[in-house]
Image (cartoon, rainbow, N blue to C red; front, side, top):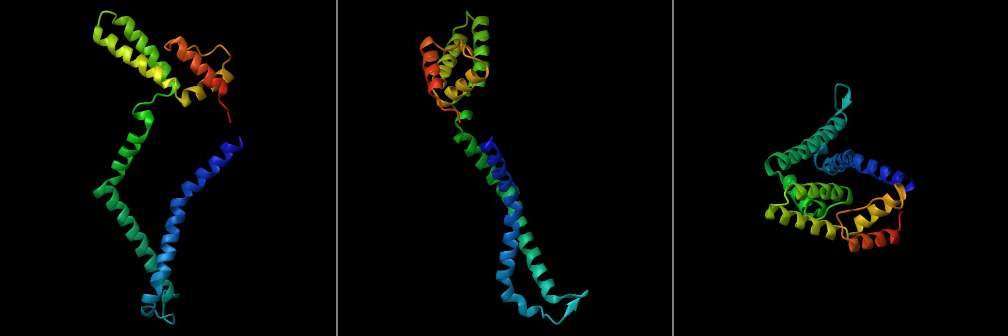
Length: 184
């Protein structure tokens, strides 16, 4: 419970970081530029009952905001680097390339079993089903499957789940790994 509360607060900080950063950008750059342009805004003069100093600071702040938004727009529309960034993120995510989490693995195993039974005479389909079985067996050796199995055993009970698609050896290994798992 404490971990979840901490992560929620951390997420809130991250979400507000964009606005806070923009405020810091504007403030910092405005105050850095002010000494170079302050001579143009004499403090004795006023416009609409507001000293020219504040008009100058406001103009610099709006200019900084405008420049940052223009850079963001160019980055998004013309350069589109975020698309490549997302592609790299997807390529580096093992669960979009070669790993399967346990709940999806169970669904894949069920579909694979149905496909195998419906196409018993088709060698290509059987070859594909054999590949999926080997892939799921390999995935069952990964830590995330042991962690999932440990959680399932705690939530559902001792005998569940029975992963029919795994060999007896793979089920025993997964059971042993789940028993050794430290749930936090």
